[in-house]
Length: 188
Ligand SMILES: [Zn+2]
Picture (tube, rainbow, N blue to C red):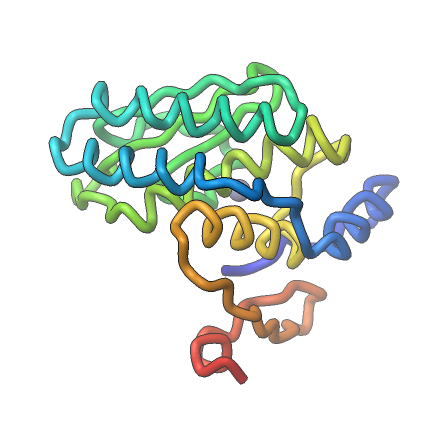
């Protein structure tokens, strides 16, 4: 995982704020983990229509908790050929801030690899965090900052019921950051 390059224009302060916010309030109940398990079993049928319903429920619960407008979702069998150019960093989904629509797909376009449940859930949380950036934090844009990835990880581990790891970041020369996975996984 790699952060975006910090913008040099008027958006810079929003970017830095996004970078700083490393936590996310989480529901103190089991609603999202319960729904996540439904997504997992629905995925085993391989049918997008079955996966759609629990995803909608997940987003509805999440939007209710964070007090944001609900976003809609489409679950597709394969990655569409046309993907918004600025949102191509995700292999398995995208989010359109104008229509508040999340799209997730269960297979890649080229090699038709099936996504694992963990990747699918993580993409769902990632796209929902883009929604939160606009609708909760009111950022003018939704950047992939260190804070963004931390917030996404918090939501993902809550939903999956797994312990959160401390992410160890390594700086690149151009101002971007990447997660140092070996050190992160060692718990250094
Ligand atoms: Zn993204």
